[in-house]
Image 1 (cartoon, rainbow, N blue to C red):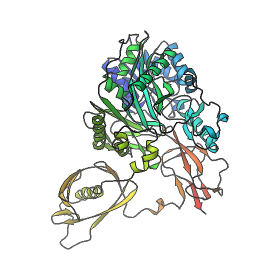
Image 2: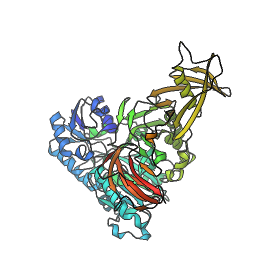
Image 3: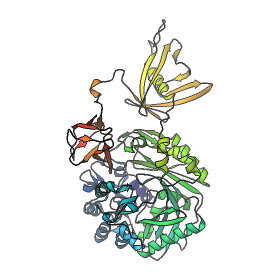
Image 4: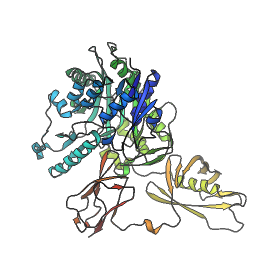
Length: 617
C-alpha cells in the first residue's frame, strides 16, 4: 500500500496530485528548483526537497536528483505529473530500480509510445522522419518534437525555404523542454478538429475508454479550451475513436491513465499520438464521469482491478486555461506578482499559484485551469464564460478576455470550431474594448483619498483635474472637478467615490466599480490600467526602430552574420528569446539598416531592454 508520494513535477499538477493524496491519507513530497523555493506546490507538500538551479535542464529534468530526493524523503512512490520527465522511460526505470512504485505505465509502454515516430509506426503510419524527403507537394508540413507534448517543439512550414529554420528552432525548444531534441516531419492537416480519448487500464487486462474530448482551440499547438464529450461526432465515429484508443493501449500492454489523440477531418479519424500520462484537461473527463483519475491511478499502481465497465457519462464539461500572456502581442508571456485570483463558486479551479505569488520566467505561463460542468453543453459553456468574466484576476496581463470571447463566439457555441479557430479570429477576439468608464472610476477613486479636512474644492471656478492612464496599450485622459458638493465629472452622476469603490450613474443606469491598487497598476472591475506620470521621463524614450524585449528571458540565438551595419528586410528574423519554455522571434519592423545590436547569446534581458535598432531606409 502506498503511504508517501513524491510528485516529480511542479505547479498546478503537483498541487492537484497532492489534493487527492491528502484525501487518501497519503503523505506528500515536493521537489522544487531555486526559482520555485516559495512556490505553492512546495509550500503545500508535507515535505519538500530542493533541486539546485533554476532551469528545467538542471532541476525538473534531472531524474537522478529526483529519485535521490524520493529516497531521502522516505517516499515509496513517484507520480510524474505531465511534461518534464512524465514520458521518459529511463526515468520510469530508475524509479522502479530504486524500489519505488511508479504511478504510471510500464517503461516499455512509455518507450513505445513516448516517441511519436515509434508510436506512428506501431499504428502502421509512417512519418516523414527525414526532412530531406519533404517536397513542395508535401506542404504544408508540421515539424514536431518526438518526445513530450504541450505544443513545444512544433512548427508549421508552408515554404520549403523555411524548413531548416523551423527544424533548428523545434530542436532547440524540444531540448529545453524535454531534454530530447529529436524531431520529425509529418503532413499538416489544416482546419481539422483535435479529438482525444481518455483511457485507463489496470494490470488485470481491463482497459476503459472514458469518452472523447475536443481540444481544437489551440494557440501555438497548445490547447486553450477543452471539453467533454467532443460535440457533433456521430455514434459510429465515436465508437471508432474508442476502438482505436483501446487498440493502441493493448498494443503496448498499457497500464494507468493515458490519452490517445486524433485529428478528425472529413469525418475520418487520423491518429496523432498517445500521451502516456495524465493530461492537463483531465478535469473535464472527471466531471462528466464523476471520477477522480488521480485516485484511480493510485489504485491501479497498488494492483487493484478496475470494474469491468467504466462509469456512465453525465452532462457536459468545459475547461479553459488561464495564461499570463498577451494574445494581442504574439501570445507574449507575462511575469510579475499575482496579487489576487478568485473565481465564483461552482467553478473548479486548479492552480499552482495563490494570492501574492510571483510569476517567473522559467516555466510555462499557465496560471490556472477553470472548469464548469452542467447537464448540457450550452449551459456548461455559458456558466464558464460568465464565471471567467466575473473572476478577480489582479496581476500581469492574462488571456481572460480572449477566453470569454472565445466561449461566446458563434463558431464555438455552435460546435463548428477547428484547429484554425485562432488563425481566423484572433484579431477580432483581441480587439481592445476596455470599459469607457473605468479610467474615470480610477481617477475619482484616487481623488477621494486626497480630499479630507481641507477639501479639494474652491469657491472660485477652477480648471478640471486631469489624469492619464494606459489601458490595453492605449492612452486615456479623464477630467473631473472638486466642488463644494464633492467630485463631479461631465456626463455622469457621481453617486459615491471611495478608495475601494466608485458608483457612477450614466443615462439612468447605475454601475459599481470595485478598485484595487498595486503601485501604478490599478484594477477597475475586470479592466487593468496603468497610471501614467504627468510629465513623461525623457530617459525612457527610445529612438525610432528600437526593438525592446517584450518579456524577460534569455537570448538564445542571433541571426547568422548579423552585425551593426547589416541591411535587413521587414519581417526578417534577427534574434530569438527563450522565456517560459518557449522561443520568441524578434523581427525587423521595417526594411532598413541595423544601427545597433545589443544582444548576444546567453544574455539575460528584462522587459523593455534595448535589443537592437533598425533605421528605416
